[in-house]
Structures are given as structure tokens and as C-alpha cells.
Length: 336
Image (tube, rainbow, N blue to C red; front, side):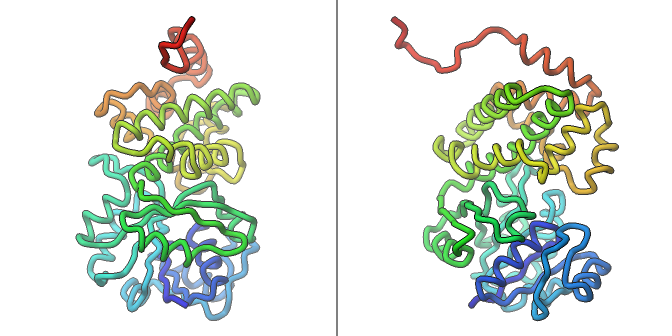
């Protein structure tokens, strides 16, 4: 049994807290929102974010970060990506060498273009940071639906420790040393999921969505490899696996937001209706900046940015993507 702190009491934080508790660990959940902590203590359920998932009486909830992380072997960073920097800065005052931080948020820091593990390492020097990613909706993990994910970290012994900590009969965990690749796949799939949702909102069909998933994955892989990620990572759980589930499921806030955008609503209107952080919108500008920095062609990412921030009509975007110059899918010299 390990003592574990979960920072962030949203749907993913609560689902992982329940999962890790089921694995016989001692769990403390922290939130910066006093009202949220009070509700969790009294109701033993997050009725807004994860209704139906009942939390045990001996799970601890606190708004005091020092109390949450004291003497914990593992700290799960489950706050939305825009709050990873500020949460890490607060955590730096209480972090002790040897504690393992597991980041489960997905995104890129807009001004620096750092991945979230790099943000944590900047705010907490000499920290041990891992990344947990893959096709995993909180709504299903909270109910014990069979799920497979990947944990990526620089040291093999840390990866194996976390694999054993998280894995059980309904939660299979693979390991990877490719932290950069896993994070790029995790962050950028949310941008492609917005595009898939936009196509749904426009009334297009499975052919369109399959095209967006496939060509979106090609864009993610091109950028990821340019940034040093391993090619095989993008065709694994944190790449194509996470992309498929995020583009296809109504559990996905990014797909739901995309549907609303495709129906003609603004980003602000979509955000208000989804009532959760739309990670793809936060990541879209950073993804485009990375494409420019590494000179990588990412037409889907570019057009999503135009819908989000330039009020370009979604139907015009689809037409332009379809009418781009003819290209070869696989570069080869093997023509007859």
C-alpha cells in the first residue's frame, strides 16, 4: 500500500482516486475550491463531474496542499492544463525529493511551448515526473470499465513502479521511455477531436471523420517526430488510441465542443455549454506555433485555429481542406 495525493478533484482526478483506492492505497484528494471539498466530504460523490461514482468514507479530502502531499510517495497532478503551472509552483514549497509526480493533464504551455512535464520540472527542479496517457474516459474508469493506458518516464524503475501501482484486472498499464512523444500525442489529439466534432456538427458522416482521424494522426506524428518523439509512440495507446476515443465518444468534451462549433456557435458559447475546460482550444494556438517552429505542415491544426480565433465558417474550412493540392500519401521510390 502507498500513500497517494491526487491534486485536482475534477472527473479524471476523482476517477483515478477511486481506482487507486481500489488498488488498496491510501488516498488524499486536494482541490483549491473549498466548496468542492465540502461537497465531496459530505456527499462522497462529485455530482457535477462524475455522478454515480461513490467514494469511500476513509478517502480524505482537503483544500490544504501541504496536508495533501505530506509523506506521500506519489502525487497525481490532475488539474486542467491551464493550472499545471500555478499548481506546480504551489507544490514546489512542499515537494520532497523522491516523491513521484504523475501528470495526467494534457496540453502545451502557450507562451513557452513546453510540454506539461517540462513545466512541472521547471517549477520543481530535480523532481521525478511521469506522464499517464491513453484512451481513457473518466466516466468509464470510474465505473471500472476495462481500460488500457501507458505510463512514460525517463527511468525504467519509476515506470515499473507506477505500472504496478496503477494496474489491475480492469486497468492495464504499458510503459514507455518516450515522454515527449506521449505528451505530444496526448495534447494534439484534442485539437483533432475538435475538428472531428466540427464535422459532426456540420452533418458530415463516417467517411469525413475517418479522414480527419487518419490525416490528423499524420500531422501529430510529423510534429512529434520533429520534436524528438519515437515514431511508434504515435501509433500506440497515447497516439492513435487516444485520438480514436476522443474523436468518437460523446464523453469527449473536445468532440462535444466541436459539434457546437460546427453548428455555428462561438467558442465562448461552446465553452459555456460544455461546462468543462476545452483542452483542444487551449492547445490549438500552441500546436500551430510548434508547427511553425519545426517547419511541419499541419493543415487541420491551422484551419481549426481559424475557426476558433478568426471566426472562419466551418464549412469553408472543410472545403479548403478537401481542395488542397493533390498529394501522395506515402513517399516512396517504388513506382513501376
